[in-house]
Length: 94
Image (cartoon, rainbow, N blue to C red; front, side, top):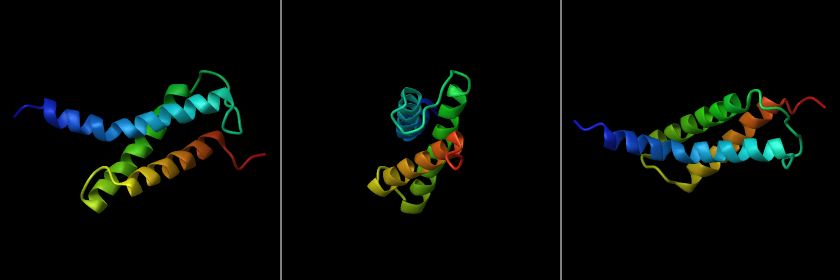
């Protein structure tokens, strides 16, 4: 069995989560999202956490809906990424 095709499909499933994660971390480091995050330490870890939670969200929507690419799954991806970003920035603190 050729492993390139399933790996290509898996990467296409994870790509939206990675894109949202990169945009959120970039906007936060520029100070465009309300609270500014400073420093390079933890940048890659934050992208990894956002990508992981977003990918799990997309996999759950794929399992629930039976197909990929539904707008509901992308909306849930954005909400999951926003919640994870709020936890990473500790938004409950003043």
